[in-house]
Length: 329
Ligand SMILES: NC(=O)c1ccc[n+]([C@@H]2O[C@H](COP(=O)([O-])OP(=O)(O)OC[C@H]3O[C@@H](n4cnc5c(N)ncnc54)[C@H](O)[C@@H]3O)[C@@H](O)[C@H]2O)c1
Image (cartoon, rainbow, N blue to C red):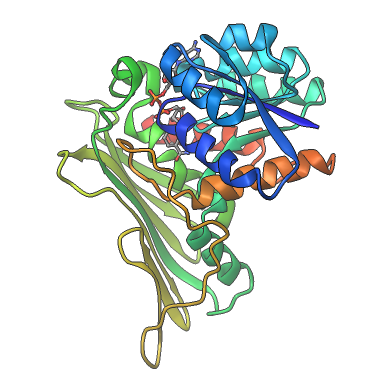
């Protein structure tokens, strides 16, 4: 039996808890332990699953009856807790970005391999239905060759974090590592590493709070844009435009996907959503459970089949962190 311990019950831990709630109807696993420094959060989530409540990640790792740990702690704590969990031979799911820097990320990747535990990083855009659609049409060459693409992620400042850790770039890496890493990872997943890259980060004021990067793939180019330099009234948006020879595919989290063919009318492609439920968690950027549900479904399904999860390995989490480090340089 898969026994999950969930550490950190803030915005993302709450979202994962909601996804587990949905997944219980589909897969054979239990959430047996949850932990947060905030006792009321731990007690409330524990009651939802009939799980044991712990009031720190360490306590859960010491006493929890678990064989998998899902780490939804602030980024600067990922390495410490993932390393401890792997050291105990537990399988791990680690939220993105994998670690605060690529040295830690590389060490963690090697350690999981050495201890032969299954591990996945929460690069959830790989599992987001509308981004899976783009990957499918790109891989199948449905609209011919890609000509150019743009990936954007724009957000108000994330003020929900515990002790405001997100706004401390030494703890979160700023918008470039926390927010923009999603598009950096997705671009690497889709196209591999670019031949050349030039990034224009914002280094004044709120350091690393925005970036525009131009990536040269030889016969096509990609622009990445990420920023949380926007006021609280600004609506979060993730979006892409991918121009192919025979059609341009556009997506915005505010308007959905459209295909604009070279000849003819734009249309909405049929995209099957595995989970259309909302997390019910307020305060963060996204309440759609889609990609979170899909990534955890995949991870737990692999564990139950004793199959190594390969769609978002820690090595990919490391590459994404490395890419952001390069952009910052
Ligand atoms: N995949 C995504 O789309 C996505 C979205 C948001 C956040 N994240 C990532 O998820 C992680 C968590 O972010 P968040 O927004 O949920 O942060 P948050 O501040 O909302 O939540 C963090 C929680 O951790 C708890 N905590 C801190 N130290 C602890 C400890 N030692 N033991 C137990 N609990 C402890 C805090 O009490 C808090 O409830 C970050 O790495 C972030 O980058 C990913």
